[in-house]
Image (cartoon, rainbow, N blue to C red):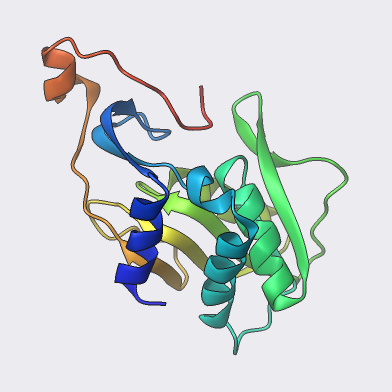
Length: 189
């Protein structure tokens, strides 16, 4: 898939929203990519996941893991494409944790996935969790990289599309200055 094909899927499914959004990172933006509107269609989720999985075809991957909520469907579909386990992490008392009986054995190789990367904060928390459990992070993958600058994960990073969307801190947000109502569409409330 080309970057243009990926972005057309977002346009076709009205998944590129405009307004005043507070992102999971705490930053504000006039645009928001709602991957759930794209991933709600199994055939599209499968296609995107297969494309991400193909980027790591030569690597040994024992499991795929993504942060709830955006990484749950994607982790499952990428794991299915690779033929391995699909896990997800959740926030508990502000910290990213494995729950629901999931476990990581020492030396297992992980592919960490996320629907959209902006600052990489949630992805880095998942990476730390995998490493703390004795796992090895073989790489990071996302559908969209919307970061203003290159995010360093300390491992290979692949994305299907790069989207440049300006973000602002709350103190210098022009939409806040105008008094525009803010929407918080992400999973961190």
